[in-house]
Image 1: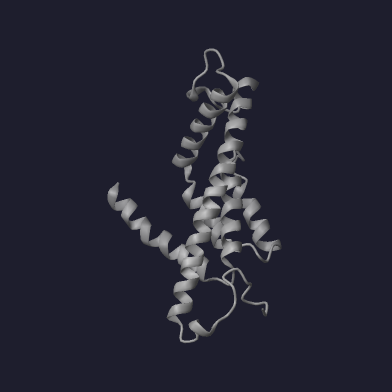
Image 2: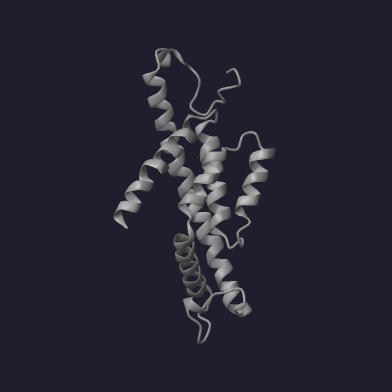
Length: 169
């Protein structure tokens, strides 16, 4: 198991580096990742990939790799943990459902269970998206700064970290 996780790390890292190196500002990469985190964390019944394809096709400023990275981060075991935490949070905020546990959460569950699931899931999705945006923005800015300082003209560049590379400043 450890070997499998160790083999994934270089692929995730190279994918993130490609996302940061693309012609997107740190804000665009971070916003794409945050949107992806929010949508993937919600119970969307597998429609995230279809939505991401549409966004990548129609929204030029969206970072395709940042969207795909959310699918890697929120793999099935992580999603089930988020769903369990969502039900717990919803039950904590709205009160428990008599006789219900985290194992009872499903589409065929009663409305009381599903409502608690959705309330908790929405709160967690927003929180995870905000944290994802902040972390990704800092990582993207750090990557852009390293790229500029490593390039021969890096010190001469005067554009902001959040300026579009294809738009003159």
